[in-house]
Amino acid sequence: MINTGEILQTLRMIQEEHFDIRTITLGINLLDCADPDAERCGQRVYEKICRMAGRLVQTGEAIERELAIPIVNKRISVTPVSMIAQADPRPIARWLDKAAKEMGVNFLGGYSALMQKGATQADERLLASIPEVLAETERLCSSVNVGSTRAGLNMNAVGEMGRIIRQTAEATADRDGLGCAKLVVFCNAVEDNPFMAGAFCGPGEPECAINVGVSGPGVVKKALEEVRGQPFDVVAETVKRTAFKITRVGQLVAREASQRLGIPFGIVDLSLAPTPARGDSVAYILEEMGLEKTGAPGTTAALALLNDAVKKGGVMASNHVGGLSGAFIPVSEDIGMIEAAAAGALTLEKLEAMTCVCSVGLDMIAVPGDTSAETISGIIADEAAIGMVNNKTTAVRIIPAIGKKAGDTVEFGGLLGFAPVMPVNSYDCSAFIRRGGRIPAPLHSLRN
Image 1 (tube, one colour):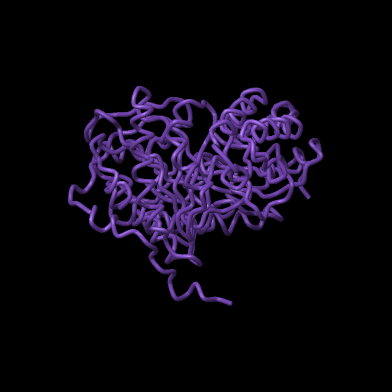
Image 2: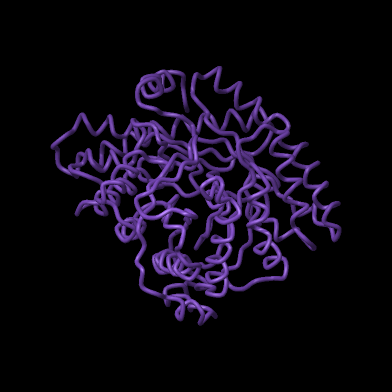
């Protein structure tokens, strides 16, 4: 049972350590909105979202005021659009963006396709529309799942996504490739993720559900300052206890939102999600463990400890933990990661190694504007292979900075932050990507 004493205990975290509820995300199933006419389908989508999400923002703001807990984002995730689009999906995208604006949410996720084993005609139409849609809409986010442990890697989709990402960067070059910040390529995508840009309401989800994402890197960093120099057993226990406190607050907010909206409670995602604010960095947690700079030898081990301890502590604090859950390492959204990348301590290859043990993958990484589509596809393939073989979710959110080179900076503002353009291995992988087909699933996928 959560009581007010536990909430009062969080006031110091909120006031001094940048603790917040990162998002309340309402998942909405849109399968009953499918229609052969794209405009009619879009209108049905718009009407259902407005009907179900009409009180989402006001409810979130009321909980925020009453409990004095910051709730940074209110968001919506919907059924992957390729599952309901029987014609051109672009009109549906416009209706989705219109609904997001009128509901007052920060982002709406679900302009998505699930292509781990192959592609339908609807999937192909959606992929082809992504650059235009992300350039023209303001709050719509897109994701594509190209692989899974059970299905292997769809290398045709991997190759196509390299081209789509380049086209999206070019279409939004006047905004430093902002469209690519709203586009994620997954392996083993989860159906209840509340975090953007990869959120969607999966086909196994209920009609609607409230999913909450918590944060709190600053709280963990502060707790570890109290055990500086202590053995890693103490470090792990400290992170576990802190993650428990953070997740309990997320559980309270989720249940409050569920009861007030009359919508089932889905999950709490207990990921440590950083921001560009100086006291809100996952990289600083790793450095508190004894690293001079994130990226130094030992970084992957430190991140493995952090990710595991967050999950162990958080899972005891909520009946339903889901989403991604662990520690995020987005470069542009974490001031410590930004500083480490700018100093040369953190490279693309080291980040890839770190993704073996963190929540997601190569996230919010800017690369030179002349990076080829095939090289982008190669980066996606490497990251997806890590997810496939290790039976975990991995993702790539990469931004080719058109007209910029390594060492330059891209600026997105807000929670998306800014990032140094990182150098990329210049050796060619185009012949590898052109093979297409599927990389078979690993042997341990046969678990029936």
